[in-house]
Image (cartoon, rainbow, N blue to C red):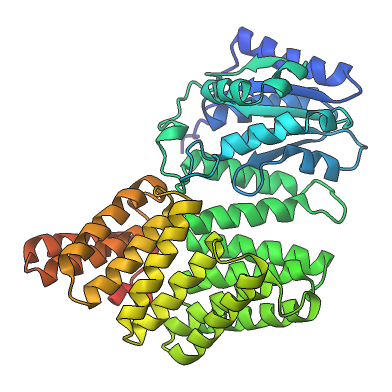
Amino acid sequence: MSKVKVRQPEALSSEHEREVKRLAKLIERTDSNVIAFALFTHIDDKKRVVDLLREMLETPISNVPLAGDVLNPLDFLTSIPKTPRHTVNFTFVGKWQRQGKEPSELEKLAGYLNIQREGFSEQPHAAIFWLTEAGLNKIITLAPDFWSWQSGGVFDFVGVSGKQVMQPEDALPTYALSEEIIAQYRQGVEEAKTIDGGSYSIHEKILENFSHLLYEAGHYDEAERLRRQAMEITKTTLGENHPDYATHLNYLGRVLRAKGQYAEAEQLYRQAMEITKTTLGKNHPDYATHLNYLALVLQSKGQYAEAEQLCRQAMEIDKITIGENHPEYAYRLNNLAGILESKGKYVKAERLHRQALEIIKTTRGKNHLEYAIGLNNLANVLESKGKHAKAEQLYRQALKIGKTTIGENHPSYARVLGNLAGALESKGKYVKAEQLYRQALKIGKTTIGENHPSYAR
């Protein structure tokens, strides 16, 4: 039997090898903080460079993906003990696009760097920011003070692996996750296990953020697995009666609800409510959030009376804590409207949906995913009232926004496709309706599976 030859990776070019040695020398010869930038095009570029750095350096090396709610590098640096000195690779894998009126994740990162530049000087660790060339140019433009202040320079590792990124960052839908981003996060999760951040768990924070990004992208199974891991860490460090643990319960409940596991989701929300009531009180915004999500689960189970009661209770708390012009309040209005629609109260439901849309348009903008959700919800009510032409128009508008925010392979996109198919069927356009139904079923089969309650619908 012949032996299988294992192909060894090609050696780095002399130019790239010199760059790695130059970066290693910068980190070694400086006892205080180091801020530098590294250019790359593919995850394998970075992997090969970091592997070589591990051989050259004695300091621990870790990888921290920057995206979603984790965009503040200084948070991580301050959480790491000052000894031993670490080399932290911060890799931006977030979104370039704005969501309506909100700043993009790249703009938020630039803001942190610009404002907190002096805080970096107090840290002994080496911070290497991995960006594409286009990303670096954006940082230079958006964070000019940080750029002029840093002294480590730029290291060019573009093309180390000979691979190219298949899709540029600004071409991805807002909530979509490329294989590169997922790979970066998985690497970050593994490496964060070795970092001791004391009471602040870097591992837990990366798990939490990655789980939420996966949830938003429609990858529910992996989102659930990582959220449960993060919960275990919080349970060990803070206990099961801490507000942070209640927050984990809430987010896990969202994932399970998306998977159609309503009974377990309900149990988690009721547990989160009890913890929050004891620790923060019944008038806290977090308590309103738990009430709201419990209401949604009860609606899914057909328990409309209790769902309406809880939703109204959450709205009363929100009126006092965040006000009636807040996006969260608009979310509550949408949910209450959906419950009323389930009870056949279409006139009241339409009025609430339109009120919610106005708030979202003002606060988030008309290109935000939440605006698309509002359009879809309003179209549902109009469809129930027999206004098929107007419903069709709104469904198409929602799909257009959805295409650029969540992409065409997301369960929510499939749901709107199915709704549009229903509107077309009501208008007698059976061939086109069938085509859209089949498209929605195909997406649903690959994302939520054929056993999900909404798949049969």
